Length: 209
Ligand SMILES: [Zn+2]
Image (tube, rainbow, N blue to C red; front, top):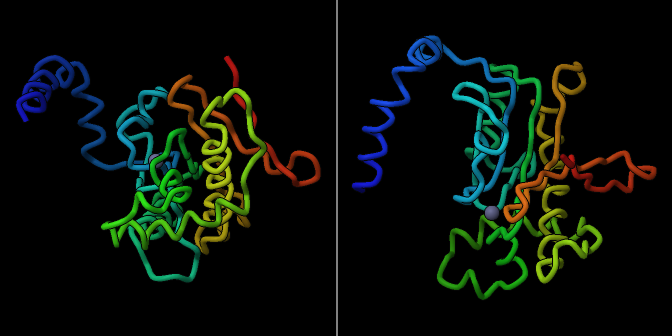
């Protein structure tokens, strides 16, 4: 814990004073433009890789970057989506999976879930990834099979996201865009799902430099 206490003291001393007016503004309310749905994985740090600031991203995270199917029991993710879209009126909803995701590793090797009854139930949500697996990419090396499944999970959860009632309605009204991303921890690069490519076959496209 010492590292955290030290870090916080440094924040109070070195960071906060220079941003006092920004935090003062934020203390009165938020108006984030982006809803960001990603994995709990500690290596995914949205503000760092996107150059965003406090107040910019409205974030919900869970194991595996899951959006449960519309119509199922309520859960933290779908409640957060509803609030972001209907109350905060975010303009974009971004679903971002990542390389080396433990949830999809477990989907490939279910022995990883022995003794984890809650995780096992939760990760039923990622099974749809198998139906959307993407072509193997040689750039992914030994992880190509896993990366193909993780990209498939982005597609599956992206479709679940678009099927959420609040999202569907906001898209129909032309006030919300939905995005599916794959973040590669090793290279730091983001690929975006282009669902319209090749008559709807779709593919992931890197943003490049
Ligand atoms: Zn993950």
